[in-house]
Image (tube, rainbow, N blue to C red; front, side):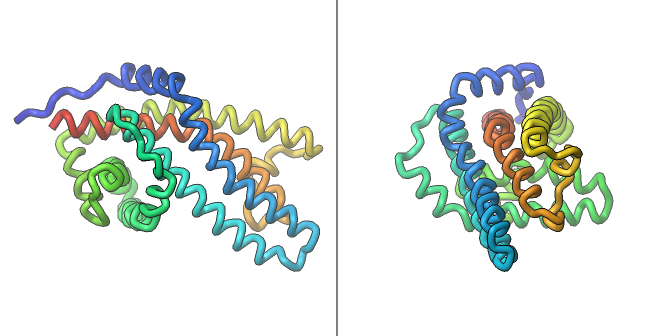
Length: 250
């Protein structure tokens, strides 16, 4: 049977923005956790400024806790968005459910990352091709219970025969909202730089963990966390809408 036509890119962007405006308070209630991890790391670095001897330990603890909390928040946002887009009610224990799924979710993300990285090492085009093919593997796990390589195969099956159509429907909306994300984070970073009295704002924008003052890196991460809190739900909305449309159109 021939696959049904997919939603127009303009309509996908319009529907995504409409749903975001309609549900922003519920979405931000969950996505606010994306700031908790970077905020904890910032506090660790602040403490390390007072006691330099514990800098290494605080860096490891802060990075580890920040990673786990951020991953858990991402799973919660995805579960909420999947349920909302289906018209279902999210289970009351969704935060515990997200925690129980965390290890399997990380394993799928790791497999996806390794496969895509392998594609980019071989050549750029295979990497891009695999990125789109496996774009929906996380949702295949969270909604359909597909695990490991099964989740990757389920995503590839949805994409099969419609790679270019899906590519444009992911890339163009993502590019639009990414530009907005960069603009918001840049304004916040500039404001913090001005308040902190930094003469060069690029210190914040290009900070690395090896920067002389780790606190600068922590501030940059915190600003990005705020940006993710505001915009990650939009990116996930786009992918969830495409995931459900692809399943219905087969």
